[in-house]
Image (tube, rainbow, N blue to C red; front, side, top):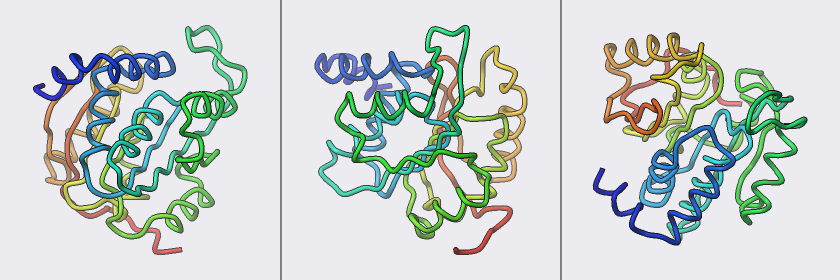
Length: 215
């Protein structure tokens, strides 16, 4: 909370994150934490469910502000979204446009596909070695456990975790909360808190349940 207060009083940065928030379903406070984690944390960044880029932008700006070289891998299935304030005919195309607008398109490796598709898994495992990831962002479907089974061995010990829809009215909320609670109970996740409109923040504590092997 101390860092969030500092971010709220840093007007230029807060304004930049607020603009990024226009392309996100995450709150500006969560985007501030994503920026902070990307800036101060160790390791690379893996995001599943970039949508049209709000959190991706926050992570890329944070990584840039760190002054260190960090890989950012962001997976987005794409498609079309109607009847929403962020409606778009082509999610992936809009994602690339928004990243370019903020000058971070070249800083992010985008993967257009399902996170649990074998080709996507192979691409991520080729780009990231074991325990390379220091920040994991998940805002996709209702099965975070499946994605941790795919990529858990790429997460560093005490990797920072940002998992959306722990609280809220989304149909994803029930399964997400149940899985996160089970992972906490099993000792694989450590809970740090809740921010924004229901985003869970914590750390990765363990090894993956399943392993696809290095590819």
